[in-house]
Structure formats: C-alpha cells, structure tokens
Length: 321
Image (cartoon, rainbow, N blue to C red):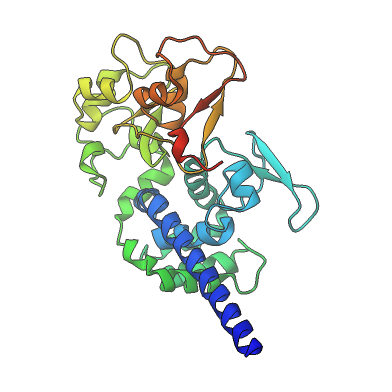
C-alpha cells in the first residue's frame, strides 16, 4: 500500500509540474504573440518560430538571463554597444546583451537575424514554413544543441503556434531590410496604429513594444502632428495617451500609440527613482497610466521624488512579494 501511495504521489507531482509548465507557456504566448506577429509582418520571421525560440531560450521568461537582462533569445554581445550581462554559458563569464524591456529583445532578435549573412537563406522561405526555419536556424549555427530544430518544432506543434503564421508581402520585407520608406504597403496592423499617410519618415520602422503596447522613441526632429497624421490618430488622443496636455514632447521619451495600461508587465513590481526623475517619466518608461501610479503610491503628478525611492507599478495588494 505504501508503494501505491508513493507511486500516486509521484504521478500527481508529475501532472502538477507539467500543468504549471503548460500554464507558463500559455501565459508567455498570450503576452508576446502580438509582437511576434508584428515582427513577422515586418521582417518575415515566422511568429511561431519567434514564440518557440522565446519559450525555449528564456524558459517562458523566467530564466536568469530573461529576469536579469530582459534577454529572451540568448543573444550574446557581438559588437554590442549597449548594456551587458555576464554569466557562464558555453564558456565562463560570457557577455550577453541587456535590455531595458523584454519587448526590446524581440525586436533586436529580428535585427540580429536579418543583419547576418549566414541567416540570409532563411528569408527565401515562406513565413508559414516553420519546419524549414527551425532546421535552417540549426544549420546556420544559431544553437549548439543538435536537437534544437526538433525542440522548436515540438513546441510549435504542441502549442499550435503555426496558427499565428501567415504569408507576408515580399516587397514589405525588402523595404524593411533596406530601411527604406514603405508607406505604400498596407500591413495587417491593428486599426489604431495603421499608417495611411505618405511621409518622409517611416515611423513604422521605429516601432517598439513596451508593456504589450506599440510606441516610438522620440527624436529631436519629431513633431506630434506629423505622427498623428501618419497613423491617422487624432492629435488629442495621442496627447491623452501620453499625458501631453500642457507639455511638449521630449527627445528620448516613448510616445505610445495606444492607451497605457493600469499596471506594468509581469515582473515589474516597483521602480527605483533615479536623480531628476518625475512620476511622468516613470509612467512613460513602463507604459503605465500616470493616474494609476498616483493611486498606487499616494502621490500627485508634481510631487518631487527622492533618488532611491520605490515607485510601485502595480496595486500593492496584488503584488508578488
């Protein structure tokens, strides 16, 4: 009888483990499927491949590299001029790219593949050919594990990630890789952010995602009315999305093309204030509504912040402590 109980306990533990792992996968897919599809439409890399690589490389976003460096694809420094994170991998103390937000690693993963000649042959494949892409990535040396292609294919088919793949226009991909304006090409973007006006600046190529929201990092020459016309968004809506009433755009800040969320992405519980930061800066950095930050922290928008203070990015009673 004792042996039966032990066997049942082991079985329940196994079922529980796979159930939790399955839930983590589904949550990860739900969180990043939008950016995976947008990157597929921009570059031709299948959304299923990006999602499967993200799941495998980051352990559904909970690996050390994902948590410490927001790096979901194991991309090493390779002439990288940004922040870095060191950890043991194939060799001791290897250098990996570090990002401010995990969404940035998804876009950089696309740039990494599109900018290296050894992956060029992959872009001759259709965005629906996930098997060809998986085998091609392994053949091009993306990973050292001999089973890498099979592992990607298994994840894609278990989670039916191929549902997110669809044909993309070749001209769009050529324009994106050449970094030339492609405003005459219509893409399957959400209606709220579809561009319909020709412009000397192709803002679409500068899009990023923070907290699951589409945004653009503002440059000195950018004008709010130009961006509003490009995306056919009313200027007062852009101002409301970004708390711009009574203030001007600041170079270096993110301009959101959608309404900010009530809380930060999972894993971001609070922010440590840096010298000179205001609550509005933090709101724009994490894609969280200013009113929500004011509520969570019992502050006014103009309240001076002290360096080192903690600013909560979610309701305190819902935080994981």
